[in-house]
Length: 355
Image 1 (cartoon, rainbow, N blue to C red):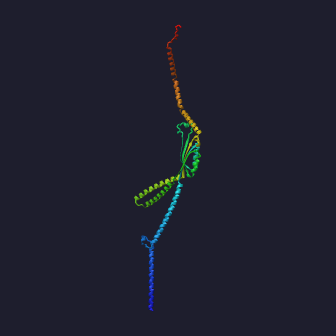
Image 2 (cartoon, rainbow, N blue to C red):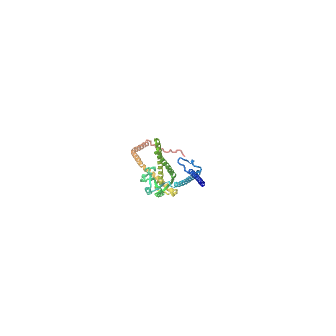
Image 3 (cartoon, rainbow, N blue to C red):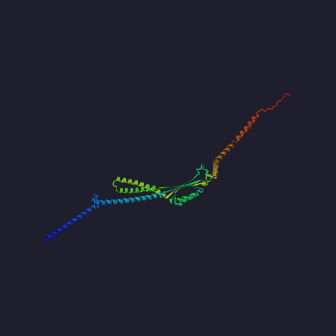
């Protein structure tokens, strides 16, 4: 009986030992797995990971690289889209319009007044203007006096008009007289504008970094060098902003240059070169020449009158002398004739020969 109980105790002991060995083996495998897959702590690299954990880490890294590649591709596509949009915007937005016109008019004062009213109507402003006449340019300054002050005046001006109203303004300006010449052009400043904007962004970011460096600077030398650099960057930023403002103003307000000339006659283009117009022009030129000669005569008339008066005075003053001289000459001639002897007229000799 005791022997049987001892066998039972031995069997129970063996089973307990086996169970303890299995549990220990399971714990060891669990510990090895945890050691293999655990993340490295601070100061600990991936060299301490077991061979079983490396494939999993490599897969994680590959997945991360794939995500980064997808992100880069997405950013690249987005950047290309932005560049495409920017290119479209460059081609259409930053445009500077310029127009110059030369206008002939018979009613100079009314035309100039109408033009100034148009400037107010379209919310523009005059950048510069000038008025002149051809009184001193025709060769004779007295020419205008004979025409009772009539002068051919000329008005020139450069005005700025809101670009949205540019076409309407130019069209109405052409109605104040006879348009002789008209030149228009458009300048695209988009590329220069956006290049300056990009440069400005870079300089502003650089400016902020130097401000942070200035806060951390400790030596006088570093502080001076950083401040000099900041000053240089500020100058560049101000120059770029000034140029951008100029571009904005030019884009917002177009340039229109107008010359208004006063003329005596409006000649249509289709009339030029015809025989009748050539004859008419020739007669007008002949009339102008005769008029100019008459003006010259009138101009020198006072001098001619003075000279004529002087000649009359001299003639009257010398009249007695001339009379005495004439009388003396007459007496001398008579005396010369009286000094000659009177010779009789000889008769013709008779013919004594007998026939």
